[in-house]
Length: 486
Picture 1 (cartoon, rainbow, N blue to C red):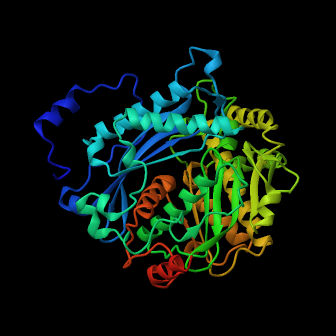
Picture 2 (picture 1 turned 180 degrees about the vertical axis):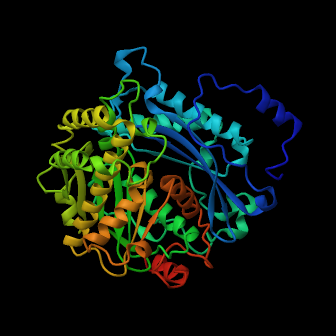
Picture 3 (picture 1 turned 30 degrees about the horizontal axis):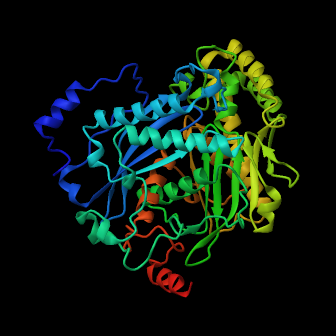
């Protein structure tokens, strides 16, 4: 059945369905191209973040290997209902929103249902579901509850368990996908887009590892649309509410993860507007339109002073081995060093201790110059954080001529941040020809979810590979040899 041909029964279901209290913050995107539906792999990326909870639908043409966003529904995580029972609260977002398994599961379910409804799809049309979270967990129990809530929300939205795990062999796969799978040649060994996850000998080194993994995979795919070969060695920087990402080296058949990132990103921008309007809890909501970089240039001195004061509280650095937490994240820098991985992070004070100071500074700039002034300040501060992070890579000799950099997440790609990042890298001689070495992409995690789903089912595209080295061919034969040796 082609996706564009909805039966009368399903049409009736769409018309009857209501989403009470739905707040659609994303842009409505056209439904899948029915002409290519026989060759399309539809994935739902379900993400619970500190600021937003999203269901983003992607469609991958398995002939070309290119993915496009076909729909999304975004809700504010802070609008989750207050828990009825205090005892049921198991954790909080960075912004302080209290979470229970029941309320989080309901938010996930409603977000998925809305995304499907708005794009005339049902759970039957989706081939795979990938779940992720940016909400930080202080304990293993908290992480377990988040994972359970995500899974429960997906199940109650209508996705069966088989759509959340990879197929063990090609015979169990839907018939129309079998011609595109290479399961009979290579199996899924945990490697996504040709990059191995850190092997910590049973020790977790960072609590946002999956976010970094998805961001890197998503940026590799985004490079296909920008005519940039974003293969190894490469760097992925995800500047959502929190910072995540990783660096992959040039090893083959699988690149090694040699660095991970954590800490604060968009939360810095959120702090700067937190004192302006108590009903505006994040910069994501507050700033709707980007202003030219030149705006308020005659008052730039005051904004520059405020930025300098803010940066006194911002630490962007290689994470010391004695830190057990960095920003909102658990870290194990000693274990990371033992397996050859460097950890980089961004903190505000110590583990977020200076957020109140940032709130006061943001309020003063807003009172002087209004919304335009605070937008300029946020763009300047966030672009500075991105550049400082890249300078950290340079100091550790990780910024080679071969490496390419991808940036995703609202705190790195919205407004004038991309232009400012390029300008600052040029003026400081950090990166030669940054326009040819950096890509900025939306929905990196969702694109990464589509890539992960393909990898879990060996739905590779040898003619247009994501793994391997830049300018080289597919690593299929190298993978076959590698897997047969172990």
